[in-house]
Amino acid sequence: MRGRFWLIGLCVWMVGCAPPRILTTPSPTQTATKTEIVSPTATATGAPSSPAPPTLAPTTVPPTATPNVTFTATPETQPMEINTMLTITVLYDNVAHDARLQTDWGFACLIEGLEQPLLFDTGGNGDILLRNMHALGVDPQTVRTVVLSHAHGDHTGGLATFLAKNPDVAVYLPQSFPANIKETVRRAGAAFVEVSEPTAIVIDAHTTGELGSPIREQALVLETPHGLVVITGCAHPGIAVLVRQARATVAGDVYLVLGGFHLGEASAAQIATTIAELRELGVQHIAPSHCTGDAARRAFAEAFGQDYRESGLGQIFVLGAEK
Ligand SMILES: [Zn+2]
Ligand SMILES: [Zn+2]
Image 1 (tube, rainbow, N blue to C red):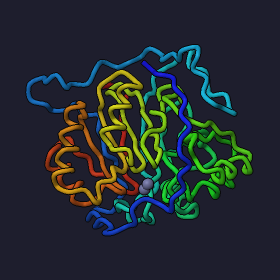
Image 2: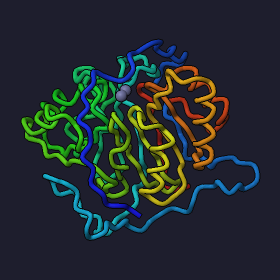
Image 3: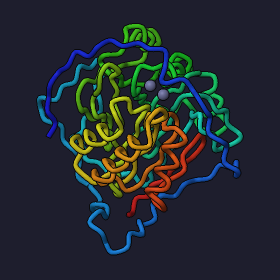
C-alpha cells in the first residue's frame, strides 16, 4: 500500500502562509472546554459511513521501508496496546477559543495518548507557544516527537525556542525543508527524520509523506478506534489531496479532519467542491481552523451539521478508547 519512491522536493522557503486577513471572532464562552467527539455519530440509519471496528493490530512497515533517517524511530513490530484515550489540544491558532491563551497567526497542536506526546507544528513564535503550553498545563519537556507540516514560518517559527527548552525530541520534517531549519534542529542537538514518503512515526501515528508543489507539506494520520484522524497545518496541496493520501497511507474510515485547510481565498464554488470531495472520501467529522477562512468554516458548519466541531486555540478534542 505504501509506494516507496523518493522525491527530491523543491526547496521552498517562504515567509508564511497567506497573511492574516480577518481573525475569527472569539467564541462567547472563553473557558477551556473539551470537545468530546467520542459519542457515536447519530447517523440516521446505520449508514455505511459508520466508523470501522477498532484496529487493534499493529501496523507493520515493509522491510524496505527505511526512511532517510538520522534517528531510529520506534520499531512498529513490537506488541502494542491501543491508547486508552487520545487527546488533541490546539496550542497555537489565530482562531480564538480560550481567552486565557494568546492567539497568533499560525498553528500547533499536541497529541497525547500515543506512546509519546507529539507536537504537530510549532506556531510562529516560540514564546507564545510556550506561554500557551504553560497556561494549559502542558509541560514542554514531556514532548518526544515534533512533526512539522511545512516550512512556512507560522508553523516552524516556534521551533528554535521550543528546542531550546526541550532538545530531547525527534523532529519529523519534509525532506524538501530549507537547510536553515534542518540546521536549527541539528544545532539544538535534536534528532531529525527527513520525510519524503508515507512513514510510521510512532505506533498509531503516521505521516502522509510530503506532497504538493511548490509548497511541500505532510499531514499527520492517527489511528484510533473511531477511525483515522487527519491533522493538517495549512493543507497547501489541498485538503482533499491530503485526506486521500492519508487513506492510502493507513486503511480505515476518516473519523475527523482537523487543522488549517487553506481556503481563506477560495470562492464559494471551490469551497463547495472541497466539501463534496471530503464527503466522497467519507470524512465523518470536521474541525477546521487557522487558514481555513471564516466563509469556509461557516460552509463546513452548515454542510456537516452536528458533525462539525468548533476548533480554535485551546480547544481539546478527546477520543475515548471505545467507539
Ligand atoms: Zn503555509
Ligand atoms: Zn499556516
